[in-house]
Image 1: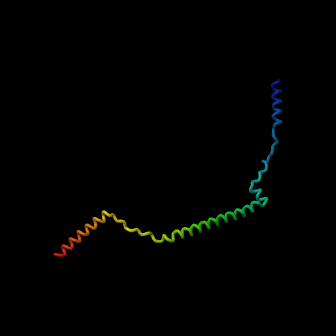
Image 2: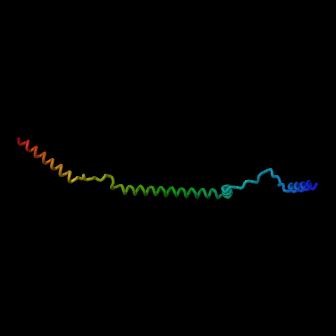
Length: 113
């Protein structure tokens, strides 16, 4: 009998702990964007953002123009490629000259005949 009495007390305690049933969930918290829209701040920020983006684009264009003008200045003298003088090997030049003299002397000797 004592056991049943304890069970009854426990059941009554558990019943008291039940929470109130709410059929609907709590309302959703407004987002940051929603709050900005209500106050009108959102559109002010949008205009300022557009100005800053346009300013960034203008600065990029100015940098591009500056780079192009600098490149044109650098490339003014580079229209024609530099001409290189042919390099000669002194040993090879001596051999060529010796052969030319030999051929000239042979041709001169055959011209006499």
